[in-house]
Length: 78
Image 1: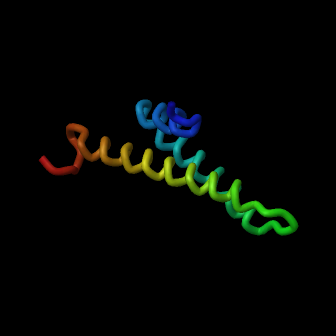
Image 2: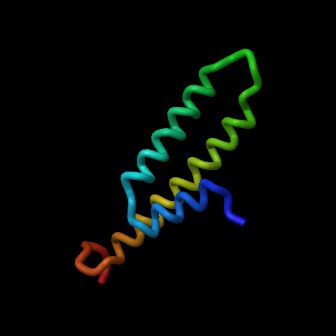
């Protein structure tokens, strides 16, 4: 069963919602920066999870970009 973030990213890709994916990415990146700057507690597990989610979002952005370049009328290969 896909994780929640995978389902969200898949929905955004199906809907061609690049803005949603970009916002999701920026949010996760801000969380990662914030957690990495903190001390006093071991944040390695949440950071690892956020890094995994960032990778899933990046893959979704790549899928969306690949779909855009394959669309008729695009500047992609014929």
